[in-house]
Structures are given as structure tokens and as C-alpha cells.
Length: 221
Image (tube, rainbow, N blue to C red; front, side):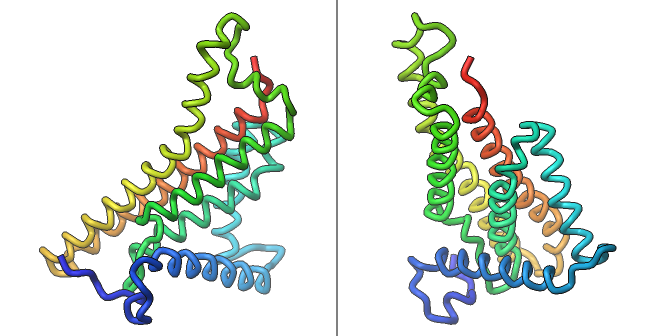
């Protein structure tokens, strides 16, 4: 299967750096959108501001309902992760663009950041007592639970990486197959399904990050 013509190929960017280019494009898109929203901010929201407030407000309410009031402190990070991944995912539906999350390196970088951050939050919250999160409920079970918990936590970045990569990469391949086997106009209804799937994958990454942070901030039982 021939590679489609994209913005990165038109700009003669090496293929190994395509995902980096589209990641920077996603950051630029979010930055420009935030500037536009800031300049058009109104007390009575309408249009795009109303939509963004509904999305962000809904995510914040969901976070607070799940974690509690302390969830408001980490919500800016969670919201940023969700919007960043969502924009990257949606790039795969735009002509001449590609989803950087279809590259495993992009997802591995985000997963490692989440892993480092939630452990940092746990250490900052509990200090040396954070080790109790890995020790199990009873002292006698420490020799058994400690290695199991350590392996479980070390597997989280791999799980985050492969889940997002597999879903987005699979959707990209299916979309290319649709385009190669049928006229473009006949594939348009499938865009709604892919749009839903890409939003869902961003939300899953957001939700798992929230769960990891919640576990790090909670008292070890």
C-alpha cells in the first residue's frame, strides 16, 4: 500500500520525524484555539466558548465526583492530557494530516510522563510512607505483594502506550482500506464512528491517568 500524501511529505520532512511534526502541529492548534477563545471570552458564552465550557466543565465535575475536591488540583493536567490526545487523534481524520498517536513513540512519551508524575504526586503526598501502596494490606504479605505491585506499576506505561497505539493505528489502517476500496464520499458515514472512537480513546487515557493519580493520593490501606 502506498503512503498517502500528507503535509509532512509535502514539506519533505523525514518519515522518522512525521509524528514529531504532527505533535507540534497539535500543540500549535491548541495554543491558537486558546488565544482565540481568550480574546472572544464573554460573560454569556455562545458558540465555541459554550461548547468548550461544557466539555471542560463536564470533565471537571466528573473528576471531582470521582476523586473529591482534591481532584481540582490535578484537573488542569488531566484536562490538558485529554485535549492534547484528542486533537492528535482527530488529525487522523483531516486531509493531508496524520495522527501522531498512531506512532508508538508519541504514546510512550505521554505514558512515561504519566508514570513519573503520579509517582511524584504519591511521594510528595506521603513521603517514604508511599512504599505502603506497594506493600499490601498485611505486613506478612509484603514479600509477596511488593514484587507483584512493582511489576504491576511498571506495566502501566506499557499498557497506556499499547492501548492507545493499537486502537488509533488500527483505525488509520481501516480508514486507508476504505479509501482504497470505495469512493471517498461513500466512506463519509464511517467518519462519525471513527470520530466517536477517537474521542473515546482520549477519554480512556484521561480516565486511567485520573485513576493512577487517585491511587497515589489516597491513603494506603
